[in-house]
Amino acid sequence: MKYNLSDFVVGLVHVFVIFMPGGILLAALAYAFDIEPILGLAGQDAGPAEWFLALAACYVLGHLVSLMASGIEDTLGVPEGEVRAVLRVLAGQSLRAQLPDILIEEKRERRWCCTVLRKNESTACRGVEQHDADRRFFRNVRVVFGLSAVVFGARALMSLLNGPGDPAALACAMAGVALMCLAHWRYRYQDRKFTQLAFESMVAEFPPAESAPFASTELRWFGRGSPPEGLDKLFRDVPAPAEWRCDYYVAGTGEEVGIKWREGTLEIKRRMGIVRTDDASLEGLGTAERWEKRSYGPREEPDPDGPPGGLTWIPVCKSRRQLKFRCGAGGAVERLADPDERVPGAGCCVELTRLRAGLGQDVEFWTFAFEAFGDGSEQLAALKRAAYAVREDIGDEALAALKACDACGYAARLKKGLKGAG
Image (cartoon, rainbow, N blue to C red; front, side, top):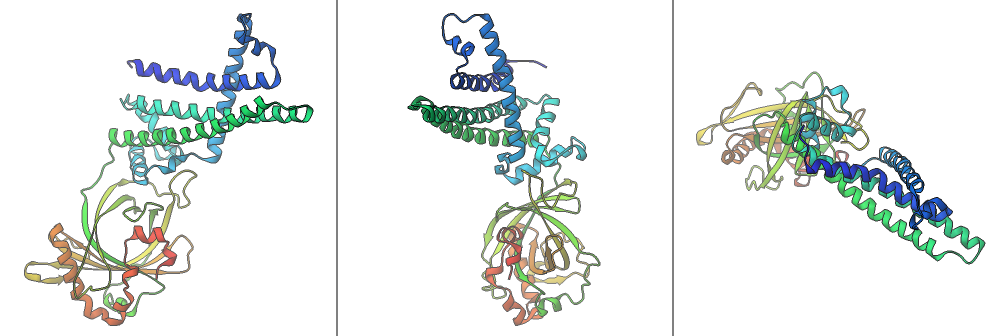
């Protein structure tokens, strides 16, 4: 491996990560407890023995501080959750293509990303390590300034109890608190940059395998309890599946992005826009949305509870029944006998799904949706034709249950909380 100036800078920062925090803490202790050998370094009579003692003390204290800071980080967690969920999930996909799943914990994914990048001698590795070194420096300095504030505060209190007080010690304690807050802000910033760069570099170097994007226009409603009788009647010829399927959704992605694990496949769905339906069949019932879905290779089943500092996956159990319509030229609409049959042109799926949010939930919900596919310019027309074809079978009573305020995608409903549906 070739070394250049950036490697030297990273190495120098690693040295400062240990020695500088140790030196700051040593100076605070020397002042607070009047340690003469250390205070003597400021004079002209300091010899090799005093300097050796000071450097050794800086080294030992620096490692103790680093150990303490690392323990605090592991206990309290790190702010890497601020990195976009989509980037985190894609980096996890890339990582699992390089390493066995059993080795990878979501809490340690960014560390494994660095290991893989270093092993493959990636050019991005140096930038990632630079941010990591900066992050650890401010992490350690944050602890040092906190300890220094405690030391100076103790000296100021003792001097106040035994005499007129020590204004200089009190000022140092207050400065320590201020510097600790500043170091904490810098640590959070560098930690976020380190995590983001590690994930971005991993995805760029080892892009996860993905299928062709699937575009659709959808109109979906959610409700609580059992679906209206008219909706059930529409699917009277479609038997319910023998078993419920459990999909996992990432919490906290917002209304425009949905991340789902479904039967071994990771799906990321983005809302591309909103479409006005302006049609008698759908008037006042809601607003259609344009979505683009990308699917990625197999992934192990996620932990529903989510590890500390990682993603939280929400299990949603489903029992789905579906109709499929082929929309031909001239406005012709044909219902297919097999909803799994592939349609080369424009068409629309109509689905009714019973839901259970979370494992062990007794309360059920339902969702009814139109999902049009095909060429983008034909999707809205296909959705309208399918809605017109089933409107009579649904009936006015069931249509009244499809309220515009309940019309949204899965991502928006999970953001609001599925228990509030209907």
